[in-house]
Length: 146
Image (tube, rainbow, N blue to C red; front, side, top):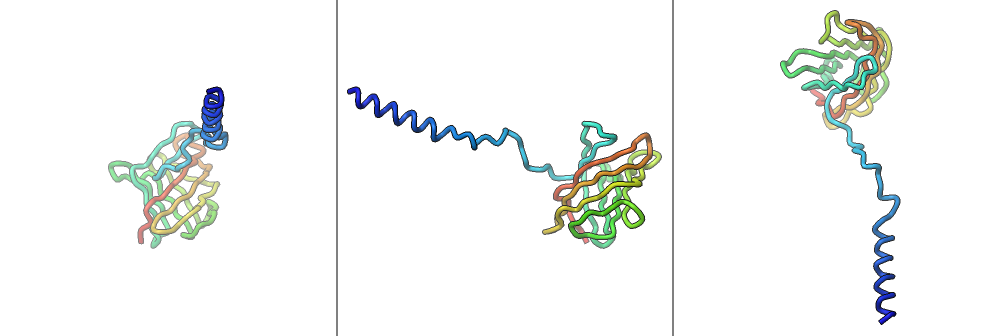
């Protein structure tokens, strides 16, 4: 009888160690990026989201709009491929939802992926307009149109 109890305890203990591996914990976080166009202003923790966003390959322009179809952002680039685009003479970043418009004078737009009619990337900018001096954000899986 003692042998049966010992074997049962050994089996239960074995299953406990197998099912509780320390490498199973991923921190509980969600590492999947949220699709769409999101940004923060002046380092704020408040994340803003555009209703729609798309990139036109014909004009090399990323447009983000609000729910009424009004332009929030217009980002003009000199390329369409995955690369870093410095804001300057050939690449422009405008936040048109404020008056006066926020015009970026420095920073980068990074296209990290442009494939299967979807584009993703990030942007970090400095500039001025309506008491805003910096805008940072992401665009994830936005539509790429002709």
